[in-house]
Image 1 (cartoon, rainbow, N blue to C red):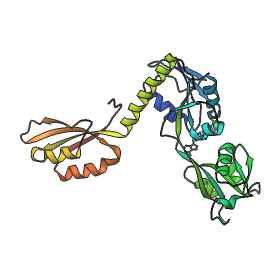
Image 2 (cartoon, helix red, strand yellow):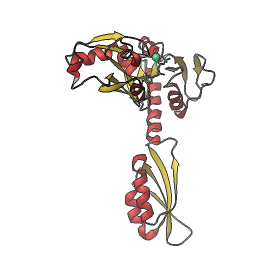
Image 3 (cartoon, rainbow, N blue to C red):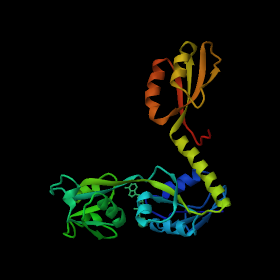
Image 4 (cartoon, rainbow, N blue to C red):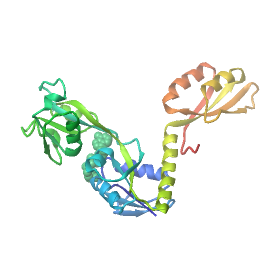
Length: 283
Ligand code: ATP
Ligand code: MG
């Protein structure tokens, strides 16, 4: 049985639940009791505050957990990062009042900075040989300069609109964060085996998210050109249509290449294009 810790409620919870469900775990996520048992994969889901997840995993109370890299690095826990998950992307940045002059990080020397991430900030400032006073507060960091508490802040930024509405500008990006799957450092063989299986499933889900299944009808005299555009996993499948001179082509395209490929396919006379999401991809 693998004990998996995820955030109970907050910015990471829904994406964590969705990922585990796409990996075939079936568990209750409605009432959000503190523990849910999974069927479809031998696991228990622990719903926790995100800050507590690295501690639970380090202690082995939970075997694995899903947490933001920012929270993990701040806690300095002894755990293993098993897989980057690609969601909950955000950055940790230093911001200062818009009107303050700023050439480079040395301008922060001797200044005061408010943050909920004192460990990450101190490491960064030390690396840059800057000595600023760090004022640790647990929330509403962005109002600190406006109320005269500090000169600047270091906080999570996603769109920058909170900074803007508080009269701040972003001057240093100190960490790019995303959700990561962490695991206890000394899992026994049975649990390690379950973790490997779970990671295999996550990889299949991630590959599928980035790919689309494409079906189209093509005139036979353009098949060569169309096949060149659609490499597929090995090569595209070609099936003859009942109508003479036409074939049905099935393949997989990468999401990023999608529109470009579609435009070229149409130019080559492809018709009746269907693009379908892929549930899982086992290669
Ligand atoms: P908890 O109650 O569990 O302690 P919290 O209030 O500390 O939750 P949230 O605001 O829910 O935390 O954010 C959880 C994580 O989501 C953050 O640590 C960060 O990794 C990521 N995150 C934060 N802000 C954003 C954002 N705007 N967009 C995407 N991800 C974000
Ligand atoms: Mg938290």
